[in-house]
Amino acid sequence: MVALAVMAGLAAILIPAVQSARGTSRRLACSARLKEIGVASHALHSAIGRFPATGEAYRELHEAMGFPLDSSGNLPGFAPGFQCPADSWATGGGVSKNYVLNAGTMTRFADHVRNGYAPLLRERVATEISDGLSTTAAFSERLVIRYSSSAADVWAGPERHLWWTEPVPDETRANDPIALQRCVERRTSQLPLRLWLIDSSGRGYDHRITPNRPGCWVGAFPDAQPDDPLVPASSEHHGGVNVLFADGHVAFIADQIDVAVWRALGTINGGEPVEGNME
Image (cartoon, rainbow, N blue to C red):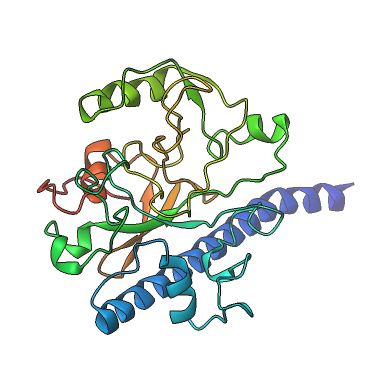
């Protein structure tokens, strides 16, 4: 009895420690993959004079990172360089990639208002990032989704799927604060399910809402604009997400980051001072 009690006590101590160590290992492996993307991005910029921030970004990066393309010269359906080992859905039938481009803090509709690392219809060059490469996010994480998600999957993963909100006035820059407020305070449902393939051309995650919060379609189904939801970064790491910055370094950003700092990190030329704790 005493021996069993001792063993039970040891298990109670060791199991959380082992789980924590595994979580840390997966987070570091994820960070290493983002660093590889950063190295490949700068290699491409040196070779062709631009960052890989168009519809060809993932194919270009995949090849630059040394992974083979498929027999047709395209990106394979499952590209391991863009899957985070900490995402339990990444290798279990999930679709889309975990490492995605930063679309900024404004509407995704047009390049003349987009202020993130990833333009919509053209490439980004380093000289455009006047806020500084070391304080401008390039890629972060987003949990993958499934075509086959059940209602139970949807309700169990509030950070994976996008929610519907109360109706919002016409989507303009002036109405961005209304859309944000309704996403934070007036979400209604995640169903019916509409999937957001975040790695498609011009989409990406954004810096309007801090990490690991539910994102939203701006409005009620089926009237919400399907091309401009609010899409926060998200991961299964405890307490935050990994972010690759435009200079190539990776930092772990806490969920509790100040929203003003998070938004400043999301713009290329906003001129905002990046102050406060990022971890």
